[in-house]
Length: 236
Image (cartoon, rainbow, N blue to C red; front, side, top):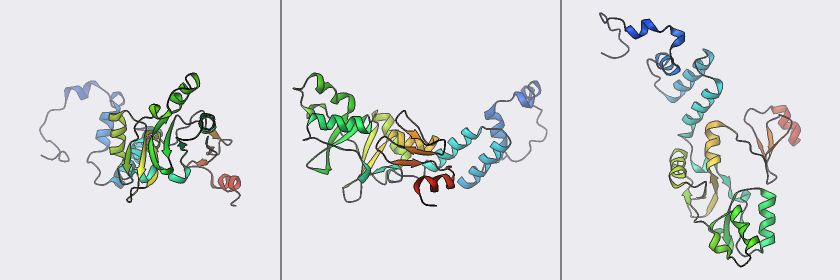
């Protein structure tokens, strides 16, 4: 019989009599609440919102579950840092110039190019660059890690699996013509699930949800107050 039909004549579960409703676990209560299951993603979103209202799940849990559902429809192109905003290192730049960029931007990983910005030849870890301070004879090329390239159309779910299996944290996003469209990090992917991830280099403007990043650009939280945003950017 389908689960939605009553099972007449079936004796009550002995376990159910032992445990009052408030003692049941979250999973059991959620399964009961979701029965019969929703037929679409939108219906599931509504069900999660109702579950939060009935205090079956916390607001943070609902937001994370909704992020997982939304991420299934997103690609690398949706979450990447666009090419004009990428902080790159030129393989032919002197050490002091490279070190200055690393300090100013405060990133831990940098794409390295040769000749022109589209010709990315590897990834440099900031900590590896510091090795040249102690051993100037080191060749910068020898410190480069292989760059990972992904198409703009690659789904975030698949990309996250690749990041985890390859133990990599950054990928270069390529457009349909083979040009560099941008870059994406594992943090960018995770933010689609859990929301904005602040680090010690992000400065928030007086709890308005407006963040000044290490590279000088600004990021605005989706729930930021519109009046505060207009005031900050002079668009009122």
